Length: 209
Image (cartoon, rainbow, N blue to C red):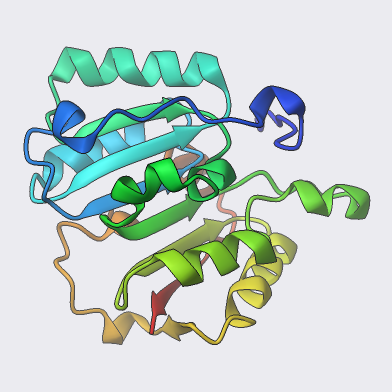
């Protein structure tokens, strides 16, 4: 079951301060993967344990889930994983986060809230403003992963990203990065639910050019 939280609420106008990378990661110079809407962190926990050559940052707007994610992280003593509470859009709006943004090499948007009603489409996480920010901040070659079980939302995300001339869609046969890193190799809780109910999954990968 989806638990929607209005990202435009004033309660989420800020993001918890993220400490300097050398305070949260054992090796702060590793490339950084950002998972937007990380829920309670199972996906990133598994991914960070499978590939310790990357650092992982999870952003989640529901504070209780972030608390649960940090408990799981601490119990496993992950040295390449950190969770933060807040609206991911605000991560890219503040110059104080530039040192973090510079290390982001890939971003995943896994099964974001669909906000079905047209009047609520402005609440969807992938918006032209965010893509413009990513276009200006992400390094050439960086990746964006999108995945959902809602066709209309998938079309919306694809259209929004493809309208930027700085991103190109990749085919699976074009991917040359390490399979152990590929976040599409790990299933989120929502993805497991979708598969168990024999529903269709839509996914694409975009690269900054």
